[in-house]
Image (cartoon, rainbow, N blue to C red; front, side, top):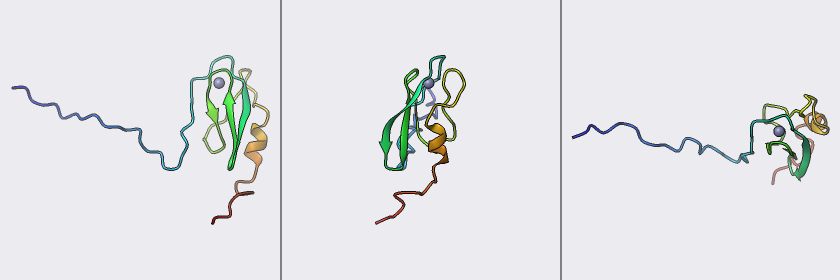
Length: 89
Ligand SMILES: [Zn+2]
């Protein structure tokens, strides 16, 4: 008889409480970020080069292939956090 290994496969990536999972891929030399969608809480940006997505509060900031900050990102970051839509029902 073989001793059963004490490993059980767990789904470790199931913690998403109200957080929309964004696509994040390793950026290459052709990153080109643009705002693709206006969401209630902010703009959604996407990279035409690697397909990553970004919105404010991710803890990182997109960069263009040349290292500069994409247009629109700074304005999005500067926007007051609760300028709009903070009135609950
Ligand atoms: Zn990219």
